[in-house]
Length: 366
Ligand SMILES: NC(=O)c1ccc[n+]([C@@H]2O[C@H](COP(=O)([O-])OP(=O)(O)OC[C@H]3O[C@@H](n4cnc5c(N)ncnc54)[C@H](O)[C@@H]3O)[C@@H](O)[C@H]2O)c1
Ligand SMILES: O=C(O)C(=O)C[C@]1(C(=O)O)C=C[C@@H](O)C=C1
Image 1 (cartoon, rainbow, N blue to C red):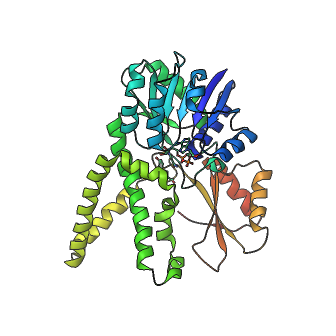
Image 2: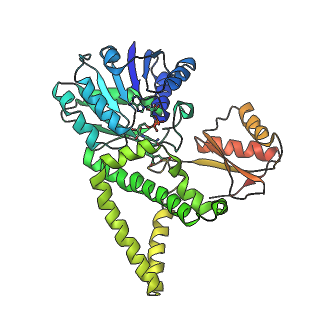
Image 3: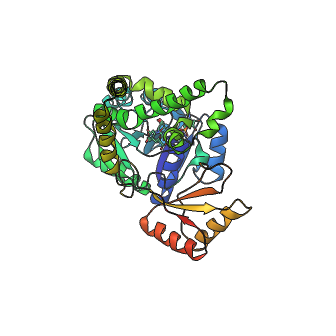
């Protein structure tokens, strides 16, 4: 039996639990969370096998400990584990979005000879909690592994085997490198999205319905602003240096852009937007990578009862799994657009053929 403790049974902890159950035949999962409803839901739905009382009380039984709470709590739990006699071969890992703080907090535990391997799956959602957990959440995404000093390569390989059910691509990096990369690709973009929403709200104070006019661009850029505030507060407080450096570059770039506009410098403006277009166009949305591979089908759904069920029933009958489903509300008062996401190009193609054969209108979108 492989006993796995997961502290923090939310979106990420819950999704890892499902992936572990799928891959590791003898896995026995003990869940810990401050939210009792999440624990009960997880136990009732077979996400975990046992509800743990607290980390210190159960940690000595573990072969693997996964810490999947907000980052500051991960650091506190790593300290707490120094007080427990753990199994000699235990692997302690986490899912926190920043790594320097986590690895620094693990130093005492590592000094005791415990294997600590920082982890960070580069996939997620603006949704929180175990109800949003999904066994396919990490498919084709990069999964950073950040070993501590002296981590045995065998232990890294063991952890990768245990996490194989995620179908993620593992990538080893050092803590500072990790924090700089995700500062650029995740943390500052998140700050910009939240600023965009807050600034727009304050500009529209006298016209509360104006936000309803927000169309594709605003919606595309702000989905992530719906994420958990606690998680993001912890991220900013534990990756401050990298984020500050990156923000300075942004401020300089925006000032330069503002100047080009004020000086009517068309060449500079064309250059600025041209460079961005070339770079963005080169990121192939179909190719799995740092920006996860999406295999989408967009369907025009008439505004009538049961229209979505028709679509999903056709796919379910053909046993095509939908990874994500979303109604795009960019065209208020008109028919909705249903965005169906599949895990592979093959599933996408088959879905397209089946739906088209049933006279369902497939939209062409990039
Ligand atoms: N959401 C993402 O996109 C994403 C992606 C990769 C990594 N992460 C990281 O993974 C971790 C978990 O994120 P998530 O999205 O699953 O969040 P979540 O809010 O869905 O889940 C966190 C869980 O931790 C529990 N929790 C919080 N504080 C606790 C405490 N003190 N003791 C016990 N339980 C506690 C919460 O009740 C919740 O169930 C975070 O460190 C986050 O930075 C998030
Ligand atoms: O897709 C989203 O909703 C996310 O914000 C996921 C995202 C990201 O920025 O890419 C957010 C934080 C995590 O540390 C990793 C992934």
